[in-house]
Amino acid sequence: MLTETHKNITYTPVVKTEEMILNMGPQHPSTHGVLRLELQLEGEIITKVIPHIGYLHRCFEKHCEAMTYPQVIPYTDRMDYLASMGNELGYVVAVERLLNIQVPERVEYIRVIMAELQRIASHLVALGTYGADIGAMTPFLFCFRDREMILSLFEMTCGARLLYNYIWVGGLSHDLHPDFVRQTRDFCNYFKPKIKELNDLLTYNKIFIDRTAHVGILPLDTAINFGISGPMLRGSGMKWDLRKDDPYSVYHKFDFDIPVGEGKVGTVGDCWDRYYVRVLEMVESLKIIEQALDQLPEGDVMSAIPKRIKPPVGQIYTRIENPRGELGYFIISDGSVNPFRVKARAPSFVNLGVMDVLCRGHMVADIIAILGSVDIVLGEVDR
Amino acid sequence: MKSPEEIFKILKDKFGESIIELKSGVPVESYIVVDPMKIDEVCLFLKDEPELKFDNCMNLSGVDDANGKKEAQTDGSSVIIGGTLSVVYHLESVYLKHKLTLKVAAPRENPQVKSVANIWRSADWNEREAYDLYGINFMNHPDLRRILMPYDWEAGYPLRKDYKNPEFYQGMKVPY
Image 1 (cartoon, rainbow over the protein chains, first blue to last red):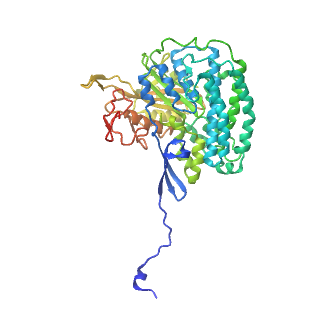
Image 2: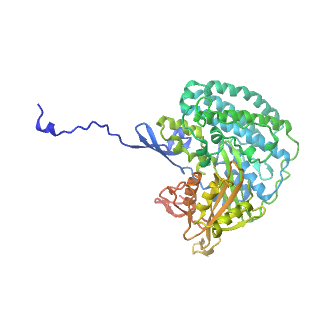
Image 3: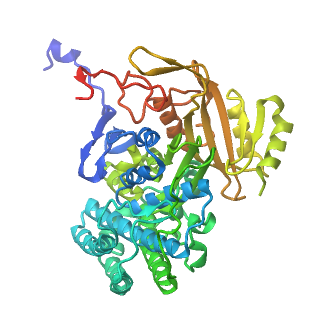
């Protein structure tokens, strides 16, 4: 028998859902630094992602204005701290074009060898941590073991393992160690079979494919409109590499391929493609290193370093292919010894802008897979 | 593939007065100066025109030209009055493989520039950065917030040449 009070209770047979806002970060192990992602969730489904950056902002561009041109080089090291050689190379190429100076052949070859070794080291971190983010711990340790050998080569060359200040305007800080060529060849021979090992361990692992194939698909036209570059753009199926399309240094002398995503296990432009492009790029880098070691000319690496670096009034935008994409430097010179304006076009900064598009409609757990495949370095995002 | 001179001619025929000048020379990279209130129309044309097809905005950077009058303050610092703030656009066509640099200059006291974030999405964050560090106001930008500096930063725009560090931030002494 229903009482009067019971009769007044109305029951609506609709499950009410509410949008939830969840903060991922700033301290989260798989954001690779201090990045806060504001997630808007409908249950488990992501409706929007708003990245909040700037936690590592340290005014790189403001500092540059108070420095002379060579003094800026150590600052560039600290932007993308996993690919310092590339950062230095980009800046130095820009200043050299502004000064219009030619550097000796040997210097260019050594720069290419260093940049490519750095690319392998950087990709090893990217691939290893990507596996670790998704739950595969072993590949991470394998990758770091191999990266350590590259860092030893750098240490032998210039004394530093991570932040080198090695590539100078017009030359290099040190010539190669007499044993460098032999040890680098040994490394190449050692490393080639390790790529197969990585493929067996991680690339074609069923769980890994389930987590990454068909996830975070980036269509090519979206990628271009967002200014995406590097392995991300190539993962979406575009044969675009600044080493071939806008050559700098001596890259035109080497024979190598540009790997692109083909949707081998999923869709073109998914996380697995972006991952696999990086694996293939390491093979191509090894090819370049071996060719460069074969052709390495003799000479003095310090001979072309100018006494005073004072570029004429002008501006220049130069870009190079860093492991993470197009690293550009926009330098304005007012004719004095300090740059008037240095703007670094950081690939991670631009690539991170596409997170919202990639994540919409996916599950929360997929964010980890997507963010790992974007491969950001927060030091470069925030500068 | 077109040279900046040819592109300048096409733009001049189409937009007339809004295209101000072409600066060329070595080592100065050639750039075209455009009216800041017309930059969005010019960019849309550059993107859609089949023979130009600039589909990629590589870089967008704010610049403080520091060409105003410097006035010394009593504490030794100086303030720049007048002059302009600029925005430099580096465009590229991925398919046609040509590049172009555009520049707009807006008055320092009230820097207003039309946004191109709806044309190239890569310009979105770069414009936010220019707004954050230079105080350039991008009109019609979908989401103009600070990006690198803290959201509660009130001590001005750090990359301006006359920027002065604040004495306090959130009640903390700077430098602490």
